[in-house]
Amino acid sequence: DTQWHSPQRGTARRWLDLAMQNARHLMESLRLESLETDERAGDPVYALGRDLGLSSVPRSMACVDISTNQGKDTVGALVWFEAGRPKKSEYRRFRIKGPAQQDDYAAIGEVVTRFLSRRREEAKPMPDLIVIDGGKGQLAAAVQAASALGLDGPAMISLAKREEEVFFPDRSESLRLPRSSPSLQLLQRIRDETHRFGVAYNRQRRTARTITSQLLDVPGIGPSRRRLLLERFGSLAGVRSASPAELAALPGFSLRLANRVLESLAEG
Image (cartoon, rainbow, N blue to C red):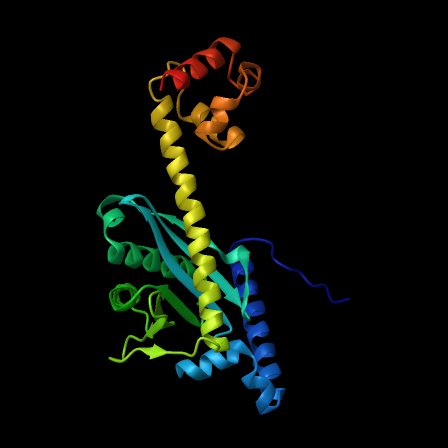
């Protein structure tokens, strides 16, 4: 009898995942080809490819956004849409360190470099389209990052918030899609979801930094205990509102240490 083996890890698993994704793309392509012209025009993914003049339908899309707090806690967010819908298993978050924290273009370039490098190393398929939240400068930074890796693709555009203009790497003129356009609405959805995802991570980093700085001078509180406090109570306000018994219930905490923490926060 024939036996089938499905690899669960390693290079063989990555190649299997790639083959499955390619098969899904082929099935989606055949589905679109089987539709009547009017039906295809109503599909926002197909409409987006048409309106942007892309060589292929952008079934898989990644969007990149940078979220910062005046140059602090700067993070990058990447959201993935498949067939016009969020695919959260492909969402990615990036901590930005060094000078790039205060340079939006450098931060965009770093996120694109890290993302594309990782996809290539893991033999994962590239998105059909990358959307950058921003204008010409942010798009140029993303294109330069991909070029530095020796990549001709994926296709890239940027979407500027103020006028909802679409910019292209090889065109001097921007594109303004009608507000009622399914193509623009799809771009807005992925842009807004990326912004939401990035802001949430930025707030998480800011909360972690705040609680770290507030607890820094408390004797007996190191990185692991600070992390436990944040994971359990969510914020500095949550720690302040906890009882000594609740703090003492955490691994590695005693009632004496719990009281010391609460007294320190009350003074701060």
